[in-house]
Each structure stands twice: as structure tokens, then as C-alpha cells.
Image (tube, rainbow, N blue to C red; front, side):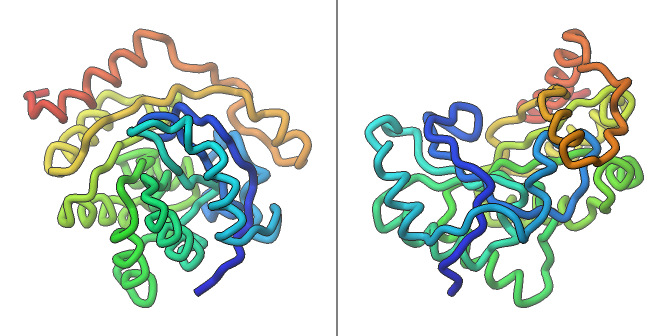
Length: 249
């Protein structure tokens, strides 16, 4: 089982990537090319810094006193599922220390095909929860935003519901790209059919990562797109959170 991982960065006191205070590990590598990505420097799987599972656990444990009962470790990206062999080993180690584990993922690598599916099923035994980013419910808009279809991502959400694994759904709200009432209502309907969703989060577009696109000399197509207005954020929150209460839209 792979013991070396490619790390993009670490955050010692994460408060926005799962319950409580989290030690957040951002892994290197992502196949999707989201037009608003704030870490395009995490795309290349060959980049980053190499670390072992033991090194990461030891580093994380230095901050355990701050986690209290709710906190723990979140592995994000990039796309953490691209390094699934490492994740299995790392989370097995984490569980030996009684650490709460979470994965922040776009779901893009998910497939029912082998060998991935067996590895994913094994990983879920050591994973307490997932933060699943659903960029768009409409497949064409999803492909336009990310360069990839969303069929397997929605299949992953359904599988996690089948095994009753706790999930927070995240949706990045981008004017003209992922802020359409019809799509938000369709996403809410999809969420209604899942039995394991504990929370829905709206993540408004921000422009904090534009300088990285410039440094990497990658054209940033959303130069003229402003963050969503507060009323649109509240609208999205109302629609999607209605799915948790099984209300009619």
C-alpha cells in the first residue's frame, strides 16, 4: 500500500472543512479544470512535496489538543481520491489514534469499476464523513465549468447514501455559471432522495486565487464575473436547505 503522498499544502487550524477545528491536508493533483479554481497550482499530480503517512500523522497530532470532541483531520485537494492508496493507509493510521477523519472531494475519480471501487469501499471503513462538492446538477453546465461530466459524481452521492455515510454537500455559487433557480431546485430534488445528507453549504465565488492563474500563465475566463449578491446567496441557501427538511419547493 502506497506510503508516499504528494502534498500541496497544510492548514493547522481549519475551521471551514468539516466539524470543529481540523488539521487540513491539501493533496496535489486534480483532473478537473474548474474555471473558478483558487488553487490551479494543485492540478499537476507531479508537483507538491512528498510526505509519508507517518510523517503526516505525527505532524497532525501536534495539534490534537485544539480539536476537542468534534475536530480531527480533513484531507482535501486538489482531488484526494486520486491518491486513494495513500488515503487508505493514512486513515487506517488515523483510526489507530482515534482521530475523526473527513474527505473533501469533487467525486471526479469515482467509478464502480475495479480496482477503484473496492479501494473506495475499503477507504469508507476508515472515513467518518465526506464533504462532496457538486459543482452543477446540469451535466452540460457541469462539463462547461469543469471539463468533465457529473454522472459518476452523482452515482457516488447515491452510493454514499446507500451505505449511510454522513455527507455535507457543497455548491460553489457562480453568477452565469452555477446560479440558476431551475438547477438549484433540481439539485435540491436530488438531495431529497439521499438519506445521509447532514448539511448543505453554499460557497460564493471569490477571486482570491486569480494571481495564481496569472503566475501560471493560464487564461482566467471569469475576469468579468463578480461574486454573487447576498440575495442570490440567500436564495440558493433557501432552495438547497429545503431539501434537508423535505419541504416542497
